[in-house]
Image (cartoon, rainbow, N blue to C red):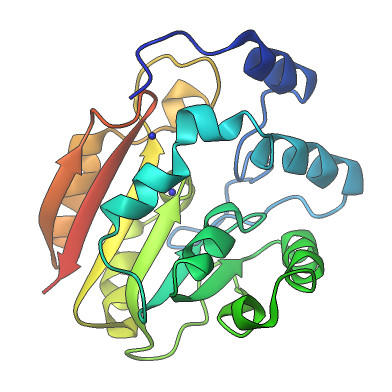
Length: 233
């Protein structure tokens, strides 16, 4: 979890304005350090509004999911954790590419929604899609369980990130990767507030401090977001 040189289509703006310009984890509140902040789970309408944005047909224009998945490299036969999966926008696409995907979220409404969608998929996809609810300080991954962790529009909502990602290394197999896709710290037509975004250089530093080698930093493929690929040491 894309570069369009043209302006964002008016249809996207209408959808985003109509939904309050929400984005992934936009209902998240600050909490204790070192934890993924807990979402507001009291409003079904809030989640339904989020789904309209996450699953908008226009998202493919700027998110470029096929391009993003290409950036992951060979995924067939691998185990990939989609941390902060939301509605499973990337999880299901990666599962269709042959990976086993663990779609992780802390919001029970997101978990329920993904389970309902999973039931509609072909059996071979259902068998490769694991949906798992996490706690705000624990992704509920097992030691050496995954080859890769993907975070799309989730990184900035994790506080005390260096300890979090240091611990996360235990769950990633030797030579495995972390791929982070998040909004650039510039004005964009939508996304989290500018003050909540993490500059790409800060992400690089935090990952290095947590014990990862930076393999790739891509600020060109997606107009509004950067892609960072790192490998656990």
